[in-house]
Length: 89
Image 1 (cartoon, rainbow, N blue to C red):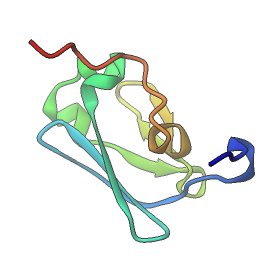
Image 2 (cartoon, rainbow, N blue to C red):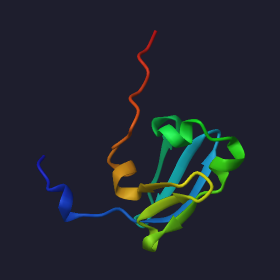
Image 3 (cartoon, rainbow, N blue to C red):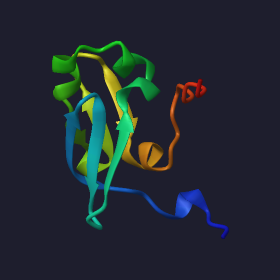
Image 4 (cartoon, helix red, strand yellow):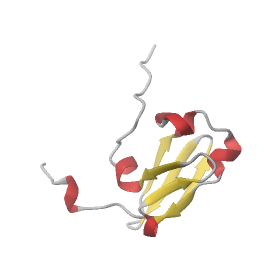
């Protein structure tokens, strides 16, 4: 299947963190999660710092004010991470 990534944008209605996994509920009802460790600033954040995430720009961005970190909902939903998964042992 081929698609143009510029043709759509994911929008979140809710965001939360549980066990160092960031979850987003999208407008279509899906819930998507990703490990905080997949982003450099989030990987080094405390649990309390991770918990203070908010939605910005009409639900198109995640913001951690204390960490000065912004992540697009679309980027996270498409798996555009800064850090690769560790290799399995």
